[in-house]
Amino acid sequence: MNALNTVEYMHNLGIQAKAASALMASASTATKNKALKALARLLREHVEPLQIDNARDLERAVANGLAAPMVDRLRLTPKVLETCALGCEQLAAMPDVIGEIIGLKQQPTGIRVGQMRVPLGVFGMIYESRPNVTIEAASLSIKSGNACILRGGSEAIDSNKALARLVAQALLEAGLPENGVQLVGTTDREAVGQLIAMPDYVDVIIPRGGKGLIERISRDAKVPVIKHLDGNCHTYVDDPCDIAMAVKVADNAKTNKYSPCNASESMLVARAVAAEFLPLIGAVYAAKGVEMRCDPEALAILKSVKDAQLAEATEQDWSEEYLAPIISIKLVDGVDEAIAHINKYSSHHTEAILTTNHQHAQKFLREVDSASVMVNASTRFADGFEYGLGAEIGISTDKFHARGPVGIEGLTSLKYVVLGDGEVRA
Image (cartoon, rainbow, N blue to C red; front, side, top):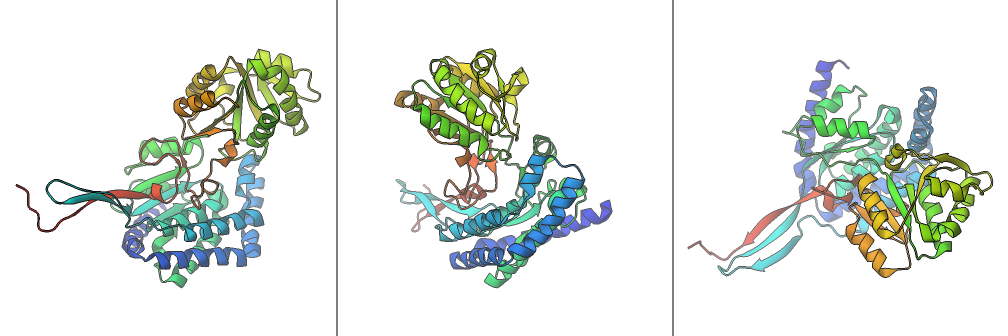
């Protein structure tokens, strides 16, 4: 597709999305839920055909030398597809927030003033690798009454097209416009440049991918952007803590899966518990082939661990998102130093404290400046499905307009509504 055709193609997608958005916004709760349930059913019915399409993407990715964590993100396993189906059903079971009026208050003049939750209109989603994002974005778009234009990575084009066909089928089954969710069918990079520069048709852009992609979108977009930056997440092991629990949680936070943005990439350990804790977690990481990049104190303690893969940490390691079996480890005096380190080096995504001290836990919750802050839980829980949002369109590290996992409410806005009975202003 040449550049001129790409401009025309994207312009047409915008026109269709804008027209569909009015129908999506006015759809009844029952209609939207019917589409979501149909999509869940279709996903389960098409597991094998979807894996055939996905296999073509995987084969091409491996042949092109795509990094292992990115190939892992590309896989549409039966488990991934079932999670997508469950997410659709969870969304269908949730209350419909569209049209909800909150904060209605009587004013001295007699009028009542409140705010109504409404769809944003049309959102554009630009994402890499994970084809399951196609379903997450589509299902959230349906439930929130928005239209959307989805532009997945070229490495997942066959998988995304197959999933988009199922979405269109589900929309039609429910009586909704099939253009309510549109996938950009070209891998031409000019399509992204067009999508982020169509304020007449697109109300917000949500990029989800590598730091380079998000920085480019944020720089060049002519419409508002909800940013999803990298996930340099921390687990802090406090003094005092339950050592056995800390080992279990720190293990899960790092090794449950290496490629997601909510995996812990850095571990801070209070000096008072380091001699007891580090050899235990070190043995777990050594057995799983996790490389530990340590400050000198942690390195000295971990040298006794059999088969441990150790290296001395550099300054860069404290800021790194590895997406791989690597973790940085640093000893700190206590909760104050841990908070200061996290606020300096983290990407403000997700941080956890493992502690038995209530005051330390409360201080950590208050003072750590990240989108999700946890006490005695794995950072891997930072996810829309796990938070009960049904699905997520990304995890925003912005402070406006949405922060943390972006579910239905993150795809809506509030408008003021005024209810009167003939009142006039004096």
